[in-house]
Image (cartoon, rainbow, N blue to C red; front, side, top):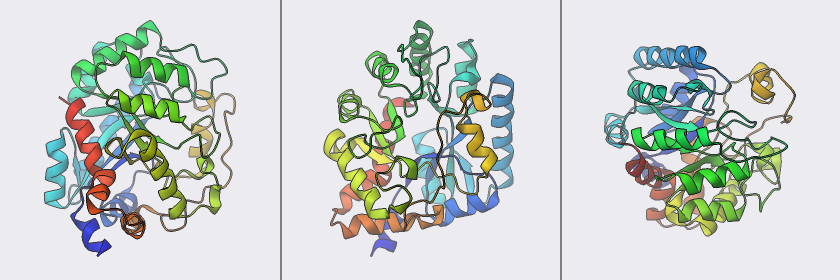
Length: 324
């Protein structure tokens, strides 16, 4: 039954930052992912980010038998009908804009649809979750949120500092998201979000995508897919069944250099954190294991309607309200 249900679902993953090559694209397709927020930029500046966006255009063209670019929620639904995996171009930092707000519209026209305001530390927009002092959303940050609201780019707050995130939630005129996070109530970690903040984002019409990145899980690399379901259920109990979804943070096929890059300030500065060995939860170790997640939800006795919402329907609802 689970295989049949999974095949029918629109499955949306709120964050994947794997090595971008054909084996990963095939895994996404095999896993039944309808669309995924795929990271183009982390610490990069404007020129490097623009090249990364161009590279994605090439990848999508060269893998057009299984990939398609997503601009609208109708494109996600069309990807499902066509049996392809939709690529949502997203950033995990806003540094690609530099300090020039008109670039927001330019990147939107290229296909940028999700942008995290800060990545771990401070930039001109606000503070990150590993910054010693979180000074909150800057005035430029407010202007950037306004411009992203105007053109229809989702504001992501996953790696953002707590005060900066709250400021953005309260300032934004459109719903915002924690695209990939875990509850601090289950593990006290700078990257995890408090029940208070998850409740606030939901009350403002926003969304929480739940990750299983091992360092943020209570049992770390000993975790199983059932620990992941526990975390999803905790978030649902706090934010609501209609405001909860999936944001795996899969790092499939990445090497040590990648993890060094993402855990240092600006990619080369001081070490912000150490992850140790990365072993995803038993049962969902690889992207192609995605059907196991649907099966685990069924084993919990979740009704089909809930599974449909959490696996992708809630993402569609959110993006319908944010993308123009």
